[in-house]
Amino acid sequence: MGSELARLLEGEARVEKDKVLAEARARAEELLAAARKDAEELAGATRRRLENERAQAKTRAASAASLKAAAMLLEAKDTAIQAVFDRAAAELKRMSEDPARRRAMLRTLLTEAAQGLETQGGTLDVPPGDAGIAQEVAKAMGLSVEIRETPEVIGGVRLTTRDRRIMVENTLASRLSRARAALVSRVAGTLWGK
Image (cartoon, rainbow, N blue to C red):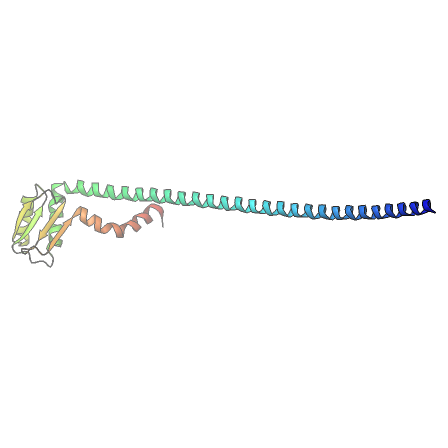
């Protein structure tokens, strides 16, 4: 009976051992499956995060390149517009050196400067070498002003009232400068059709 009891106990122990081993294997399989699932989810999340970061980096790079290209285009356009105004200033200077045109130009600039001003006893500043022409033009216009040559005035006139409270500078350069703001968009439209 003792040996039968031992065999019975051995059989139960074996069954219990197999059952525990089967449960341990099942639990290990569950843990392994859960770990694989977690690893796949982590790998997927990492892959999505890296793809998102790469897309953002591409977008930032494209945006930076676009900004740089726009800045370069704007600089090129500004340079072209400046070149137009530089050429205009050079042409105005060339025209003002022609004696026939210089007299007409001085008359026009002085007429505009004197409009609405009390010129009696005022001062007319002109570029060096223009005092004679200015004297003739002022006399023809009936202006009684002191005429002075000064290197400060280039390509035009500066008319100051007797009390020195009002001064009008009417030179080709000042006119071009005043007109620049209004002309820039027209020049750009002519150059680029916008």
